[in-house]
Figure (tube, rainbow, N blue to C red):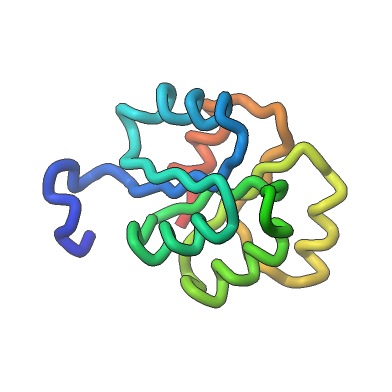
Length: 126
């Protein structure tokens, strides 16, 4: 809402942090009409994109090649305390760890999930 996105002012900016190429393609195809998207496939890239793109919502896969998802979530929180983060993971066991660390997140989806479900979570976030 800071005027940078004059072309599509009503679309949310979503940063997808996901290293699975097939899933990234699915996200891009499915959400192209709805959101302005940025993608990162590693923790380092995610933090760079976070700074560059100022997303409205971050969709964070907890398994990344270069970093632990919980550590990355902590760093996202430090950089942008208010940004909603939607966590995606194949592992149910991560959730208690997040509660222990008290790292706020807006939604938590276990893979495989429905893209409609993710869209609804993005729309509700923030």
